[in-house]
Length: 260
Ligand code: ARG
Image (cartoon, rainbow, N blue to C red; front, side, top):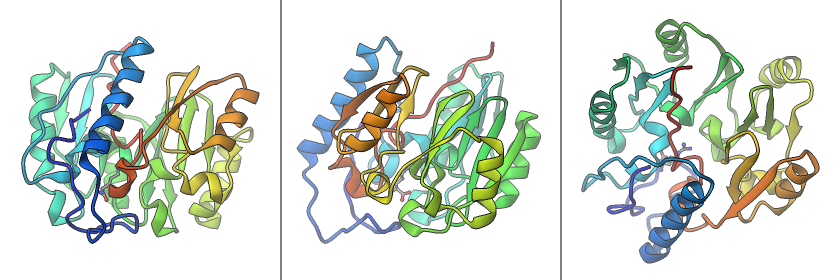
């Protein structure tokens, strides 16, 4: 995670961002601290990346890269406002004793658009990450990458439209994907959960699952009850102020998947 030290909404690169509306920064800090406390309370370890002045979106650590089996693929941001974040995340990976650190050649917004599940990697495109980056990641990780096309600008990153719950279960908002991608999702995950637009705009899917506990937006009450029905323990965290930048719990979290 990256502390929201320099967070603010000073530009708009997604439909959630409204620089003209003031952000309650104290509330952002409190929500981010509460999210971190939830992870620690669940027994997870939380590493911190040093925030950098002038990079207000750095709090969305999920975009800083993708780590699988101790191999880190760094990020390459689409918009100039975020481009400088990439090197800071790469530096962090280099200092973290990864087996390999790869600096990507194509636009790649990390775990915002790449979600590993059961030996494959789901990869979003349409708004940020380029399809060429999907092939690049497949090559670096030696894993099959399934390309999913995002079509609704409110769900511009894959992690706003799809959540990995276990190694064979995902939840998603169908209308965020093209018809072709819906068919691929249905074929790959026949038992998948789907959510309504109402849940999706509450950032229900921007969630982090450890296979049992699912840390989700406190506003996603419908999805929380669906999760309970399926044997999960939803842990609601208020992230509505953090959402002013267009991100929630998952966006603030880059998962470090160790080898083994
Ligand atoms: N303001 C950021 C952007 O538009 C938000 C990123 C949200 N992160 C995410 N993983 N979906 O790039």
